[in-house]
Every structure is written in C-alpha cells, then in structure tokens.
Image 1 (cartoon, helix red, strand yellow):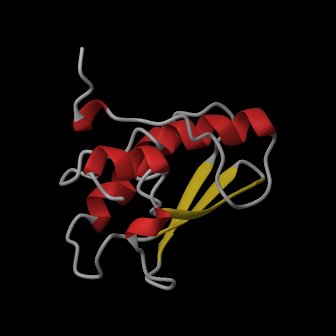
Image 2 (cartoon, rainbow, N blue to C red):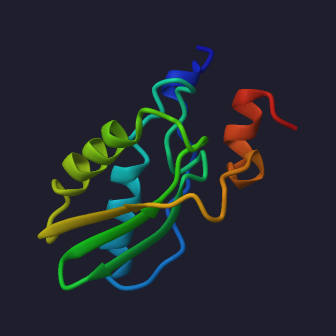
Length: 120
C-alpha cells in the first residue's frame, strides 16, 4: 500500500537538548512526532520545527518554531504537544516556548520529510 502524507513518520528518535534518561527522551520525542502540521500532513519533528528538548525533574521544556511567523496553528500545535507529552510516564509538567530565531527553513526537515513533500 502506498504511504499517504498523513501517515508519514520517519524514525527520528532524538532531538537536541539535555536531561532525562534515554528511554524517557525517546518516548517524549515519539509523542512529539505524533503532532501533525495540519496543512502539510507531516509531523513537527520531521519538519524540523522542534529546536530543543530539555527534561529536568519530570518537566519537559520544548523550544519550537512554525514554518512562518504568521502561521495561525501555533496554539493548536502547542496544545497537542502538551496533551501527548503529558501521557508519557514520569512526566509531571510541560513548558513550551515558540521562537522565530533562527527562522525555519526547508533544510531543517528530515530527508524523509523532504522526499514526502518533493523538496530536493
């Protein structure tokens, strides 16, 4: 069966940042990778929108961006991140910071996301 963009997810399991044991970090990244950009049908991890993931004392701190500064889906993405990360065992809190520096560019996408969107 051919994979549709909405079903797309690569095997990215790491993100820049620090803290937490390897298993917990992997679970948090997997939770974040289920958050889809509703316009592109690709998850926010593979799109390169998550810039940093820090775990400290059960609290997840995510620094993320959007594809454009005026993108209206920021609150939706943040709410989905919070809901999904809160379900990871051992996580007691969630904080998110949206930034626009450095600006997002298509080069930040995983190779799988670039291929799915036809970006070469």
